[in-house]
Length: 269
Ligand SMILES: Nc1ncnc2c1ncn2[C@@H]1O[C@H](COP(=O)(O)OP(=O)(O)OP(=O)(O)O)[C@@H](O)[C@H]1O
Image 1 (cartoon, helix red, strand yellow):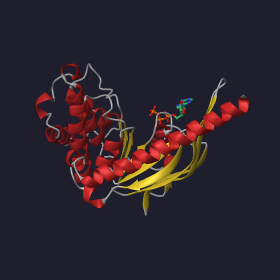
Image 2 (cartoon, rainbow, N blue to C red; image 1 turned 180 degrees about the vertical axis):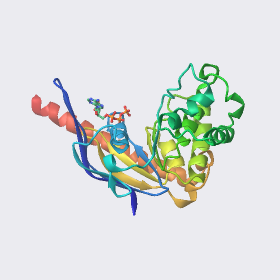
Image 3 (cartoon, rainbow, N blue to C red; image 1 turned 90 degrees about the vertical axis):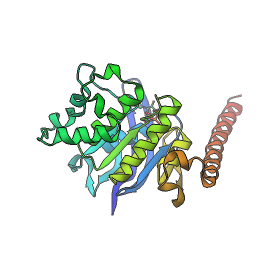
Image 4 (tube, rainbow, N blue to C red; image 1 turned 135 degrees about the vertical axis):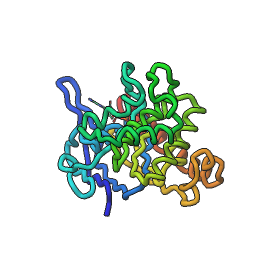
C-alpha cells in the first residue's frame, strides 16, 4: 500500500490583489521507507506540496492521503526540516531538542535520554548544554535534525535543509541525514534545486516544471546508488549518466518555455 498519496492535487493562492495557480494536477505516491526528491526551478510549487502534505494548507482540489487517511484525519507524526533551523537562542541545545515532546505533552522520563542518544549520533552530545549562538551553521542544522527525529515521525519533509550551508558542510550533512534516515527506515520527501543532492540521497526523483507547478518526468535512481553514502554516489558512473538525463530534461523544458515566450512576442508584434 502507498504510504503517501496525492491524487490530482491542484492549488491556487488567492488574495484581493493576486491569483496564482501554484499546482496543477499533481499525482504521486510514496512507499513506506522510500526517499523521494522533488526537483525543480524556483516557484514550481515544491514547498506548496510539502505544506499540503503537512496539513499546513489545504489543497484547492484533489486528495492527499497518509496511510490511506485524508491528511486532516491522519494522526501520523510528521517531521519538518527547513532551510532555517529556527532554534530558540535563549534555550540550550537539549532544551531546543525537547520542545516538540514538551508541546505535544510527550515529555516522558526517558525522552531526555533518547535526545542525548540522538545528539551523540550526530556528534553533538558535548554541546547539549550550550546555546545555539555558539554553534556553527552545520551544527545548528544537526540540532534541527535531532529536534525533528525526537518526536519519532514516520515521514520527514525536508525543505532545502542544506541550501544555507557552505558546500563542505552540506556534503557532510547529506551523508549524515541519509545514513540516519535509512537506518531508521523513515519515509522522506526532499525538496531541492540541486540535481546532485537529489540523485545522491533519493530512490526516486520527480522533476517539476513551473507555471503552474506540475510533475513532468519521474527518474528512478539505479539500485546500485541507493544504499551508498551520497558522497560516494557522486563518483559512480551511473550518477553521471542520470545527472546528464535530468540536465537534458531541464534544458528541454527551458527551451520550450523560451519558444512560447518568443511566439507570444511575435504574435504581439
Ligand atoms: N502564500 C502565498 N501566497 C501567494 N502565492 C504564493 C504563496 N506561496 C507561494 N506562492 C506562489 O506559488 C508558487 C509556488 O510557490 P512555492 O514556494 O511552492 O514554490 P517552490 O518551488 O517551493 O519555490 P522555491 O524553490 O523558490 O522555494 C509561486 O509562484 C509562488 O510565488
